[in-house]
Image (cartoon, rainbow, N blue to C red; front, side, top):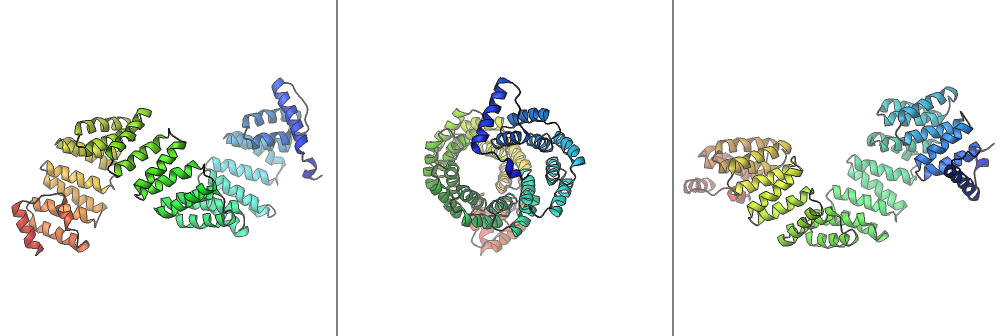
Length: 465
C-alpha cells in the first residue's frame, strides 16, 4: 500500500490530536494505530514540542513494540535533544535488520557529525549518495544542513554546491550557499548568491538584511544601507534592519544621520542598552560631549555592570580634562572587564596627563600584551617613556613597532624625533628621509609629538634644505 493511503485529512488529524491531548491530560491509555501515532508525533515535532512528542512516542512503543518507524522517530527526538549516544544505540539496533534504510545512514551520519567525528559522518553520507539518486536533492541538502548546524561551513558548502550544480533553481540551496560564504569570509561570493536568491524572491526581507550585513563587513556602507532600506520597505517593522542601518551610517562616519536612525530605533526599543551606547558614541564623534555623556550615563543607570558605559563617561571626562573623574570612571570599567586593552590604554592616557608616568607606562605595556596590533598603543607607550626621560627605551619600543607596521610614516617620524631628541642626528636624518620617501607631504607628523629645541631645529632646517 502507498504511504499516501495513510495521510490524515485535517479534520481527522484534529480529532486524533484532541483524543491524544485528552489521554495526556487524564493520564489514561487510549489506543492509536501506528499511522495515527506517526501523525501525532510529527505534528508535535513540527511545532517543536519535543517533550510532548517524546511522551507520546514512549506510549506508542508500548502499544507497538519494535515498530521501525516509531523507533526511527524516537532516534530523531533523541538527536534533537542532543542525546546522540542513545540515538546511536537505537539506530545500530535497527541497522541490523534494516540494512538498506537510507534514513538510518542519514541519522547515523548526523550523530557522528554532532559528535565531531566528521570523517565517519561523511562515510555514512557517501553511502546514501552512492546508493540513492531518486531523492538526491533532499539528501544532499539535509547532509549540508547537518554540517551547517554544527558550524562546519566549508564541508556544508561542498554539499550545497554539489546540490546547486544539480538543482540550480532551488532557492533554499542558494540562500544557504550565500550564508556559508558569509561565515567563511568569502564576501564577494556571498553577495553573488544573495543576489541570485533576491532575483527569485525580491520580497525576502531576510535576504536583503543578510546582504546588508555582508556589505557592512566589507565596509561598503552605502550598499549596506541600500540593502537595509529594501528590507525596511518590505517590512517597516523590521527593527534589526533599522538598527543595522544606524550602525552602517555610524561606521561610515555619517554621525548626524546615524543619530536620527538610532533615535527612531529607540522609539520602538527604548531599553536597548547597546543602541543607547552607540547613540552616545555618535554624539561624542560630533563633539557634543554633553549629550554623549548623558547617554553613556543612562546606560550605567540601566546596568551598573555595563562596562562600555563607564568607559564612555571616562572618555568624555578625559576630553574635558577632568582627569580625576575620568580615572574614577575608567577604574569602574576595568573592574568589570580587566582584560579590555582599550580600557587599559585609556587609563594610561589619563595617568599620563596626571604625570603619573610609571603607572601610565605599565598600563600601555599591559594593553600591548593584549592587543599588539594597535599602532596607537605603541606610539603612546613610546611617548610615555619619553616623558619619563627613558628616550633610549622609547626608541627600542618604536623599532619593535616597525616589525608590525613596517612603513608607517607616523611611527617613522616619531622615531626620527626620538633620535633627534637623543642627539643621534645620523639616525634622525635616516628616518626623516625614509618617512619623506614614503609620504613626501607628511612633515606635520614629524612635529606632532615633539617640540624641537633650538639645536634640533637648526639640524632639521639644515637637513631639509
